[in-house]
Image 1: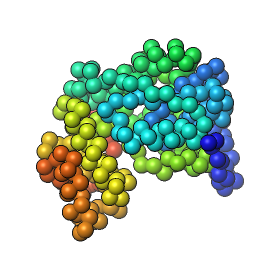
Image 2: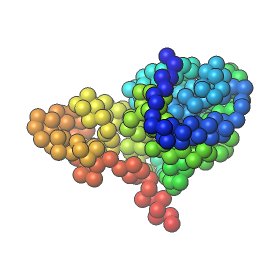
Image 3: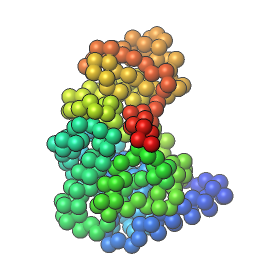
Length: 288
């Protein structure tokens, strides 16, 4: 299904047209473009702009699949690519076989992205005739110190058209609404490994616990949720508006049951709510 464009206010429309043009310019004019695609709002907007600028037949969405990708996110990625009208291919990634990834230091994301971009370069690009690969880092991401995956992009020559165009997260969401994308207002969904404290080993078993617990929480109506893995303890982060509901009956018993059934013994609700970069930012700051 082609992207259905919605009409914003005139001044906003001009700004977004200029932003889209800057993103398209940053893409260049490749014969075949691959977009490292997660189905999140950033990569979805990048994919949509690329399809509009180059034509969908010259663009390919590439989804890395491993135990760190939740099944719900995998399904959503296929749905969004179909909405945009661009074919999607899956590439199995094996970051779990990389010792440095399993060790889970602050550079874990580098090893994950490096594995993805290596697989795209070695397998997908040749098979599908790609001459350029891009991914969805936005301008806000580019300013954060806790995004080591960007170093992997640099190593592999992967483009960052959103960041190059100066597109902030808010602007990316605005473009997603104009394009009518399903994920325009979707909460951020970092990979499941981000729920495990640094220096605690990343294992498929832990990732599975987190995935089951978060899926159960979403079924209870908590759309924006992170379940942090602290051994037997699950530390649940929710949007501020959901904190009260989670500790009141009847949801309180449902929350406890859902998380325990995922394999945790204790269930703790973090009163600070959702915290992006909760594990990485303090370590990066400590380095000065």
